[in-house]
Structure formats: structure tokens, C-alpha cells
Amino acid sequence: MLQASSERRPRIAVVDDEPLILEAWKEILEGRYETKLFSDPLSAATYFETEGADVAVLDVRMPGMDGLALLERIKRSQPSTEVIMITGHGTIEMAVQAIQAGAYDFVCKPIDDIDAAIRRVDGALERRRLRELNQALKSQLDAYLPDTELIGDGKAIRKVRDLIVQVADSPAPVIICGESGTGKELAARALHLNSSRRDRPFVAINCAAMPETLIDSELFGHERGAFTGAMSSHKGLFEAANGGTLFLDEIGDIPLQTQVRLLRTLQDGEIRAVGATRSRTVDVRVIGATNVNLERAMREGRFREDFYYRISTFRIDLVPLRERREDIPLIATHILKKVADRANRQVSGFSDDALNLLMHYDWPGNVRELSNAIEHAVTLAANGEIDVAHLPAFVASQGGPRFKSAVHNDEIASATSVPFATARDKLVEDFERRYLADLLTVTGGNLSEAARRSGIDRSNLRRLLHRHSLMAATFKGQS
Image (cartoon, rainbow, N blue to C red):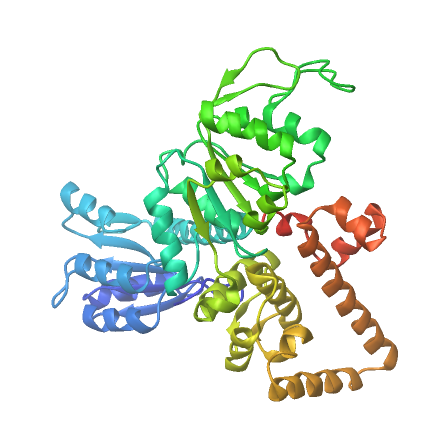
């Protein structure tokens, strides 16, 4: 499909069966635009199936195919082309029909004002430019929005999607279980978006990231003076999610006393803020998620049985990525588009060897690890296609001797083609980026925890992340 570009003149195609009219349009347009002229609408239709134009100017009445029929053909093959319809026998009904079929403008002959004709074409070009800009901005915005679809066509993920549709409208609690990085929050969002609560809030909290002394206040709110430092009253997340969904990530790490309070809320639909004497009624659908073996946690006394049976009215189990390798190409392609849009890189896809390597690696970090590996590859590939050499070396380590050798040879060739200092700096840069990505993965994007684990103070850590174009927010909530 033809793409608008600042490196060429806009292309205008004119279709009219009268040679004198075509010659007049040629005089009007040539010099300002690249012009294509057609006296036969059938030839023009063939042209638009393989080539294209930014703007098409079509006569309505032509032998063999009228302009309205050609308009429909163009919109099917080149939907971004703006179309101006021209006729000497126009009616309001015909104009409405053309606009409804996708025409930008409808002009009656004769066209005596050349400047007016150019303004019409320029208006169509500006509309096309704004539509392309809007689409580009939307793609960039979508790249930062959380995913709302479980990608894949394998039996396991289809079963999960079917179960989500079945239980989405129930007010009963749901527990989502699976290894870290399998997409538990994504499944929770899918439950919310498939329910009648979709227009109400979806509120998420990582329970493992909350100190025991604050989690009750965060969930249920607190009154002024309820504890030292409570200078004003505070509404909790249950009230923030009223009418919608509250997602409790890492629910297996909730303290026992908080489990008791949650149990009462799930049973009675009431919450009581810390320090309050009265309860308030809320309408919240609670979804929990964990990578902890809750049955073992119950046996060890770390998770209450009564709370487990209440929170797990419905249970959704997400299988690890290594058990649904058939979905990896779809997931990888989806991630690649989002990462490339965020980085503003034109990366078209994966080579066969790179895709084969992705499918053979076990992905202990599941989809989150795959996402980090693709982000690494997009950074190195810059533009074009992702090949084996662009993927992190640890991915190739599981791909067999052929892949290990290919990566090793590529690394040697790349290193020895530059001075020692440059090769050393590149190696340090690659190590830093991989270390930081793994650190953010392990800590779920929590900068305080990442600083503690790494021994890097927060200000220096932020500078390092900025240098490597890594954002902590990208790693949050991808449990």
C-alpha cells in the first residue's frame, strides 16, 4: 500500500473518460504533484489494486464502470486514499451516496476556478495526513496501554478464554493461579472487560509490595487519628473500586489478620475503615492471583482455609509458556509490535532461526521474560528483522549447538570489528541493560526493592534506567 512520505511529492490519480478534462487536470496538477491520468476506469481499478495514490479524482459517469463503483473498489484495496468525485450531472442524492461510500468531497463541473480545485486537492491531502498522524499516535498510545487480550490459539489458552467468558458476569470471587509472568493480571482484566462492570473501575494492588502495617489501611481505608501519622481520613481501594473490580495480586502474601477482614468483606459485602466504628457497604468483584501453592500454604498455616474456599469460588489456572509453545509466534509478534511502537523502530518481524530459537527456549520467566528478550532484540536490531544475534545470549544457550555457535561467532565477529575499548564498552552496556531488565522483572518494577537488591541508590538507578531506555512502569503488574 502506498505510504505518504516527506521524501516524494503527493501522488494524485485522475480518472475521466474525456481527454480534454484529463488534459485540464494535468495542467492544474503537474508541477505541484506527481500525477497519474486514466481515461479507462477499468485500467484505473487494476492500478489501484497494485499501486495507489494519496488522492483520487473520479468522474461519476464513465463507460464500463461508473465513478461510484470505482470509488468502492478503491476503498476496498486502498482505504487510506482520499477520493474527490466530479460530475456535470450532480444531485443531492448522488452526493450523499458518494460521501457515505467514503468520498472526501463531491464537486460539480465545470471547474472554472483553478485555485479552488487545488484547494480541494490540498484539503484531501491534509485529511489523509491527519488520519495517518492520528493512527500513528493511536499506535503509540496503544503501545503503552495494558494488554486486554489473552494471545494464543492453543488448547490451553482457549480453555482459559472460554472459562473467562463463562464466569465473567458472576459476582463471585475468582482466584487465578500460575507461575510468575504467565499473565495473571491480564486474565483479571479480561474478566473485568467481559463483565457488566467493564465501565466501572478496575483497581489493582500488589499485596506483596505492601508493608503488613499499611495493607489494611490501603484496602479498607482509615479514619483520622486511627494510628500515628493518620492526619486525615483516607478511602481505601475497596471504595475506589466500588461497582467494579478489585484485583489482589500476590494474594498468597496477605497477612493472616488481613485475610480475616477480607473474608468478612467477601461474605457480607461490608468494609470497616481502620479506626472506624461503622461499616460501609460496597459492591466489588474480588479477583485474587498468586504464584504460591496455596494448598501447601494452608498446611503450613500461612493461608486460612476458610478464606481460600471463599476466594476460590472459581479458579483459573494459567499454564507456563513452555507448555504452550505453539502460541509463542503469536505472542512474540504481538509483543514485538508494542515494543517497536514504543521505541519508534521499524522492525518487521523475526527470522526463521530467531523464531525457532524462541520456541525452543523454556522461558522460566514466562511471557514477561519473553517480552524483555524481545525488547533487548528490538534495541539491537534497530530496523529490519530480528535475527538470532539480536536475542539475549541466554536464549541461545538452550537452543542447541547450532544456535550457540551462531551467536558465539556473531559476537566474535562483531567484537573484533571494532577497537578494544569500543568492544569493552559495548559489552558493559549489554550487561547493564540485561541486568537492569532482569532486576525489574524480579521486583515487578518496584524501584525501592530494585535499589535494595542491587545496592544501587535510587537516583543512580533511575539514571541507569533512563540511559538504557527502560521504564519501571513497563514491568509493573505483569505477574
